[in-house]
Image (cartoon, rainbow, N blue to C red; front, side):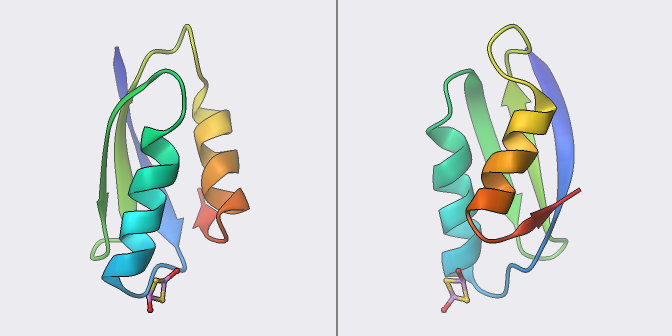
Length: 68
Ligand code: 9UX
């Protein structure tokens, strides 16, 4: 398992962070996602054999936010 911190821009309320948490949690290979509004970030524990950090960022972008 690997842990990465992804900066997430565009989250403005608890619904946003809840959405990002759900999107990340549903990805195969994600063990745990902790998303905070302030600071706007996601701390994700994932299995690098199953999913890449790039894929996590792409999923956040697809949900309407900006990952970096
Ligand atoms: Mo809050 Mo975010 O009303 O996608 S849920 S702004």
